[in-house]
Image (cartoon, rainbow, N blue to C red; front, side):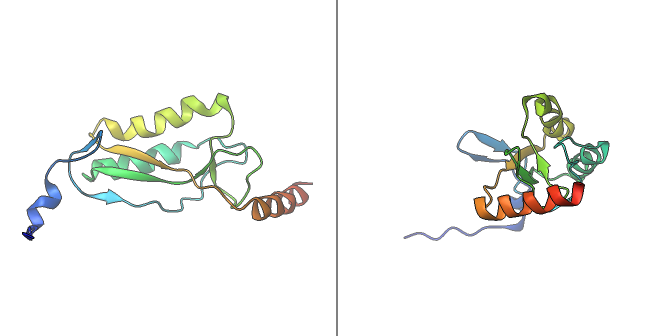
Length: 128
């Protein structure tokens, strides 16, 4: 077995992963921004974050924790693509980084249904 040596310069080279091509191998991992609104919509601050990350030169951004469930209140401030009316906002999120050839990859976790129900009930009682 021939062992290939990597060099630091490879980090900055274009790479393809199946059908996804990145301008380099620098990837911002999924983090917690905590900026999602209660209805799942995004504030302008979300777009600013992704634009700034792309401006820094990274090849890809894995988005923050984004649920697709209507009643998933696992964390306060969680981004939630839970309604078709929100699609334009979430399409514009990666578009804000694409101008700099930075790809966005959604982090779509599936929370434990028990935790989700419990968190949702706690949240509902706080809203009253």
